[in-house]
Amino acid sequence: VFQSYALYPHMSVRKNIAFPLKMAGMPPAEQDRRVEDAARILNLSNYLDRRPGQLSGGQRQRVAIGRAIVREPAAFLFDEPLSNLDAALRVTMRHEITELHQKLKTTMIYVTHDQVEAMTMADKIVVLHAGRIEQVGSPLELYNAPANIFVAGFIGSPRMNFITGPEAAKHGAHTIGIRPEHLEIAAEGGWQGRVHLAEHLGSDTFLKVDSPELGELTVRVSGERGLNPGDEVRLTPRPDRIYRFSEDGRSMT
Image (cartoon, rainbow, N blue to C red; front, side, top):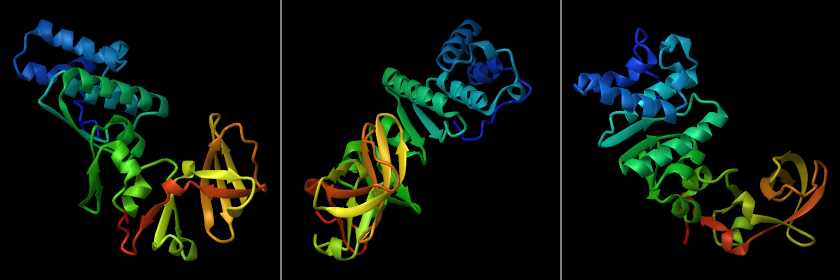
């Protein structure tokens, strides 16, 4: 399944999805059954008689995914298949692909730049950077024990805060990393800062805090915390959640 749709423009959606089955000589009745099942999963049942030119970009990508699903292959190769879908449909399709994987027990190699997709869908993540494998592991292994600064910054949303200078030296490191969810608002002590941006998302609030000593820090707090731009805060990191990195960016255990 490609990022580009690679559909036959002169064929209907039904024929596009069924094309690999037709080429394999599958009986028409079985073709129809598989096409209908895939269309139901992908919310395409009402579009089977349309041509790709009559569909939106997201609908075309779903047709391409359907064409792969009906083949029930030995392995699926996905190249950012959800990048052209709207946010709500992307969440739905993540669930559908995950459920499909659990049902078929088939290997899926899935390329994505979206770390949320990687964290929620993968059994094992291979983090690539400039053609090199930086780390291989389960989502939680990469989240809890990143091998280097690149992995630490990629895994987790919002991304990890990185601090250098004297504060890092106190921990015997060139750089320390602290995730936004591991910074707590303290009544006293800690690092002093001023909120300059508050993103209220309901269950959570993301704060951008300017610290004279450390620069800008991102903090994740409960959505019920009534903090606003201009408020003074003090931040305390969880001691067991401070990540240490050497000058070359590697994790120091």
